[in-house]
Length: 385
Image 1: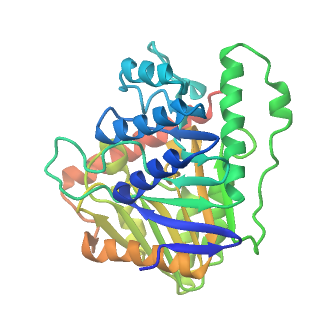
Image 2 (image 1 turned 180 degrees about the horizontal axis):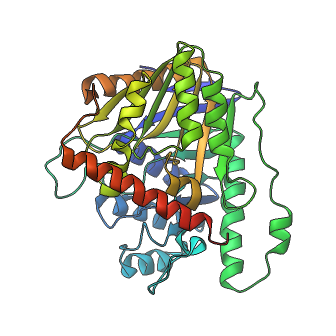
């Protein structure tokens, strides 16, 4: 299967799982000449984390600009000595909302950096959903890696990734120094409407003017679908508008396939999703639960022509609280290969859900979980931004 594509003047390489992603990332870091920027939600103190940390330190030892931005919640367990070692080697490390004390339910405190981005020399970028963590979950009887994807971008779009990462980096640094950031807010990019002829586009979700860019891109693609929609999401709890568009697509004769998490990783989100199964199945939507390992992918393909890979799930916590980044690609060969990977996983490593009826206990738990999440969403949207 081909995995490198020329799209819109960019060279895109589709990378499945850490076995492909981490060696390539570290090789690019080792070949860097000027700068390395890395953002991640989870940076684990395991073999993979050490591999990437050592690559960053080697780059810093060559007097390159090396910057690492970590989420304060997702990477909270990273030992301080790891941070100290990297800083001592010359790696600049910043935290996004590192909470050291108990806090009340405040929306601005719950916001997370969920993007997984890297850029090397402003020429090579990585966009996807892969955290810096071992591919195979520790302490579990699983020998198959999490299903996840990233895209290596070689071309002008890497500069756009770098600009966005630098913008966030300096805004955090200024905030830490209690500097005013009014001029940064004034120069925020306007909301993005992707032209229909743009082959490769980078979309972000922030908490200001780009809160809905990724969501709108999904909705536009679904509304325009003619033959098939394939969605793969670790956490899938869409609102009414998204469910309605999927149902309308089925009524137009479009095949809709959902590849969802089959193993219980986060109970509240897992069981809340089960509450939607009956409605989705009755609408004619195919549901497959990935069971070979944990599903961590956030990917979609529409009509074998439009594709997206990134960090954004379709659940309220991602849509309301998390900074995300997705790559949207309009290219048949790229979309076709991603579609093959997703449908192969659905056929070989997942169970098709034929009916939503489960035990009364699971049904009750599902609806209670859904109710809890809806209540949390209600409380969050009432909080100040």
